[in-house]
Length: 235
Ligand code: SAH
Image 1 (tube, rainbow, N blue to C red):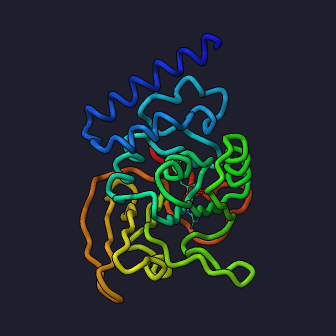
Image 2 (cartoon, helix red, strand yellow):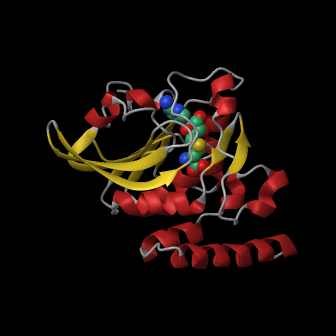
């Protein structure tokens, strides 16, 4: 083991203790976070920040989510190893890996092709066999591919903020009894919300925590971030 690996191990243990002290009670989630090497998902120049409890830029105006936010959102998801999960906003794949340690299978969609490529490479390198990826618009949900339908999902987690409400097509891909966790609101006043599908057209809604997320945007992205994306990147 070299010095960097040792330093990262020590930082990782400190981070997990910090998450516990900040109120994350689910041991399975803390274990999953301990088992995912976050430095793999961060540009090399910033890998010394891998185990700080902060969001870090990953290019194209996007960020890797803050560990405390990942842990809190997954806790609110009430995940078990029987669940089929849809994640919208793969980024470089960090949260998908944490989800994959806890769920049966994870489907994840990213609209920036270069990030999707990085995530794919990360999943391969870490030998994650229960993650299926797609470069596309997650606001439309998971599409039928070669005639195969994956929806409905037991759980849906969205890693970018919807302006006013969750996209209808996503709500429709939730199983009855299923839970969706999604940040909603304009930059500066976003709230993570929990939608539980109680019946065909009945959803109960609960506020979880205030957050700062990049915006949920439609369509596959062009190569460069739009001015809106640049403006709305969290500090
Ligand atoms: N899950 C990531 C978070 C990445 S930030 C992690 O663990 O670090 C959120 C990501 O959502 C960005 O990469 C952004 O490009 C993506 N995104 C925004 N709108 C999207 C959409 N409609 N479909 C798919 N991805 C989207």
